[in-house]
Image: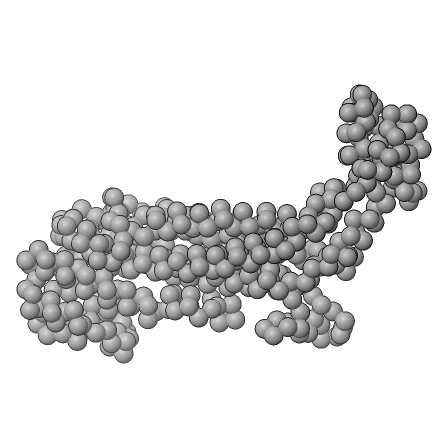
Length: 416
């Protein structure tokens, strides 16, 4: 992910330095497990525990081997003496790499959870703030019935709560380790080593594995990220629409510290919804990566590495993009400008038509058959649309309505 759309902490999680650090932790934990089983001498383990990873040595070795894990273990071994023979004992490459990747995914989930909590808090605060602020609800883009603006925010709040639960469930399924040797048979490393390493690293052992941790776990992680991104895109799309000049019920923060200060290079009056547009664009990226993650599930036999090249891109990019747009959305929700007066003007723009369902229901309650009540109210509604007449005055003078409902009862209906 380019630096423009990356935040520092998530960038650190998906950095090569963190990957190598986690590989080192796995290798040291494995040596400790062998020591506990009496295979590796304690004196050797004391030295292995202090092993270092030298990036320059790794780069030099990788030029020769073109194999990242071989180069890593050799570079690690250069900081050791004869005890280096125990490094990577009984393991295969993905025992280390997949277990370390699981730790990265867990770290990513933990950070994303904190960011979700920040967004939930922002949504909760604004939902309470606008709990009693009336606005028009729209279906098919057309005025429907009155609602409160706080209700929109509450809807987003509970959806993000569901997303948080999904992320927590995905974390459980990705936070698994595997140290089962070639093709997962434990022929070269007993299950007790896997159990020990996973316990040391805070992971659960995979119930069954072959030579890789199964990619349905990783696919689920990316699917959850795509779902969260879809929610953010939904919120962003609504804010963008409500910021249109003809509506102008809300606006992104503009010309505030940390936000856009210029809307156009040629039109000085412009205040564009650039931040929510950015969220929509990056949500598409995350959603696209979910397809690749699904395609990574099917590998040949006990393993191939067709997934590897794709994962090196989609896992960091999806994580970084979601972290960025979720943080961006938190700021937008916290600082967006809301125009209650404009909401009221929009409510009144259709001359009372938004109360047509109430009139119909009252007629039914007064004994009018529902179809007849609907037809009578629709007749008045269409006249109001076509002739730009006040809907309340039309229903008051319509014989089918006036014969059943008093003017006072009608007046009581037209209240937000």
